[in-house]
Length: 373
Ligand SMILES: [Zn+2]
Image (spheres, rainbow, N blue to C red):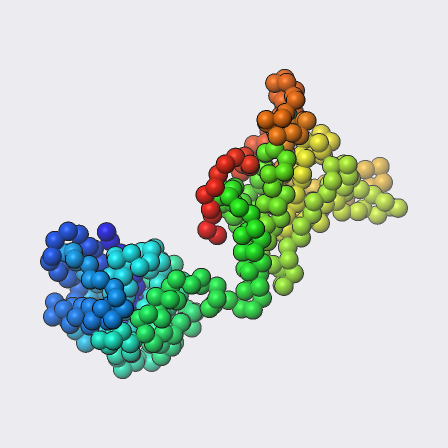
């Protein structure tokens, strides 16, 4: 098992980010690379004592500790915390992935208290960020001088660091409005049980604006999935992204737009710019409305030519369509349609239209896996 994390050495102004790797395998040998052996032993002795105080057992394994770039003895005391975290990940205290985007810093006392060992360089720059995602930095605020684009979380004891790692990050680092936004998402998302795969794909669809079609029997929560997915769209200056769910009876005019008293009137597609356009009962929409979506999806623009005149709109709406499995709309167990009716229902959507929806999901199976947003 190999655990990766990041340390920080303020005395190296040009490359303060230190990659720390720890491998555990069977055996009882300690190998080190990139740091003096004696310094590694001293650091591990402090870590061992700190972990004992927290009832964390030392791994009875061979450990290989690799640090890059190489450090001198005087530079390496701040690595106690990242190495201790790597050992705790090996002992299963948290998932190793939690460390791969984390920068931590601090020297450990024998009781697990963290301190800031080095005289700090004020020239330290943050221009050389490590090549992986930085989630946050843990240590005292003074440990990260001039690191302005990195949220720093202060901890004074190893146990606080562990607690912080096991808490969702949103608590610490978001503005008030972003916090409210993400709570809303978690609330909506949390209300939906199961459907792990559908939720995962909707997250991806919302992020990348990939048009999505959901198929499944009625009453399986297609609409609530779509409403929850709407909460994933970025807010625009504090306002939620538009959500439009026009009814099929609105037809072409409702979807695309119309002319009234000599003025063009936007349809739902134009109004849903930067938001979500939900087309429920998709096969029930009039064919011209459905088929005109093909050109709209390709170009993000719409030209309406009527006797009264011409109008054009552009919109970057995320299209989510939903359909039942057959025209009777009953659950498959109670469906009264014969196979030809079912085929006819599915054939209402032409192949060129269907292939413009890169995400096609079946909803209402028995997928109980959960999606970690
Ligand atoms: Zn049926």
